[in-house]
Length: 231
Length: 231
DNA sequence: CAGGGGATGTTAATGGCGTCAACATCGGGC
DNA sequence: GCCCGATGTTGACGCCATTAACATCCCCTG
Image (cartoon, rainbow over all chains, first blue to last red; front, side, top):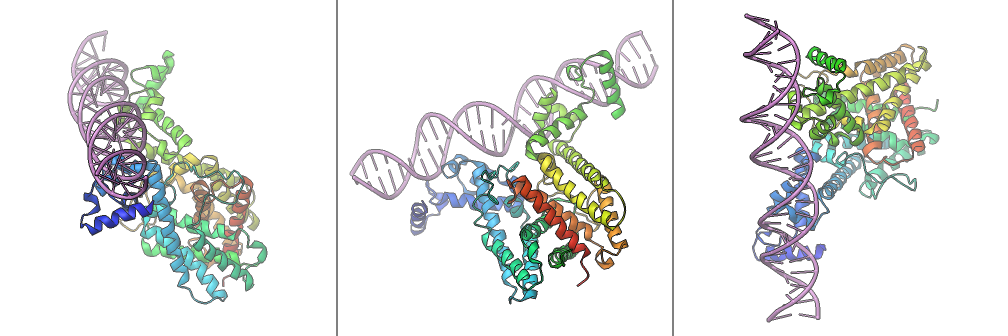
């Protein structure tokens, strides 16, 4: 699929004809995703309008139906992109912490949380689209009782880094082993809660400096909770 | 305003004529809000469609414009209702914890968080509408740098209870005083993160039992973080 | 106790959106 | 070389939000 479109795109390039001027675009799917992503960046998930994306690419609205099942499908692509970007952002933030001692593990956990929230603030539209875009979560219901949902391959790297850091906390005796399982969820919830509260909740409009201070406070709380001696 | 409509409503009742059958409804504003909240309950904020609400009440779509600026205004009313319901839910949950000792304070904090998440799970549509309904947070930008946003009067009771419980934690020596300020935000973020993750995030579709276990885990983490000795 | 005026509802119309069906155009494989 | 399927286009339908113009009702004044 991508081969064919790529070939067409190459031809367009070779002929010195801009793809948008040809009857067959050559890479319409990606062009639409890019346009839709831009819309999401500027206006959140609600701004991901199929006709608007087509307009941006310079193509008729119904052309999109050759590449997507419908608007929801297009939005889904944006969602996955946003989630990928978020994971990358976290990965970079986590990788900036060197070493593998206890302090490094703690610092890395904090960096991951900070990266999560920072991405939400820097790319509010994409972040909002990455979650909440779908109405009433028709996310897979996990029939088999599996742990989470869908492919989630995007989240893996950042998630793994968090898990490893938590393992390190246990390994060096900072965290009681019996409270290790499920710790990822607590950390994730804290970061996600901060992110959503500042985007569309009571923390919206807070001065940046004050908000960052609260984030550090929350990170301290969660780390302190992890490393506190068992009651 | 309400007087007049109430008077009309009374008349309708006295005449034994159902309000919806009269040319002038008598209490259209409230009827529309009720219909809209029903829509939100069933389908989330995206289902709050002005025409649908009017249809439910048995009135022409444009009649709504006599009582609301537009769909956004109607949605806003639903939002406030949802937030009020959430606060009530928390208040009840918190009030079920008796006593005022250290254990009670801890238990009350946990109960508030549990109530928050439980409401989200029991009323996903209303909860989603209470937040995130507005696109790209046109929430007041806090020009003056004021602490939070808008009136927030709805949140006061539950928020106060949380603050008091945290104060109690400090008073009885369980929580270091220097980490008291900002603790509400950490607790709020944790609860809100759990709620949103389970509604529209990676925790969606998790078996209820497992999710509840994770909630208790997260509550333990946040409380442990609060009560941990300063590093 | 009239009836006039303002509040409240209705119909009609505009423009945008998602989506389907029918038609047009291109280009790679026989 | 040409033909068929992939890719785009036009046209149309139904839904939505919103505005303008018109209709109905009921309280308040005289």
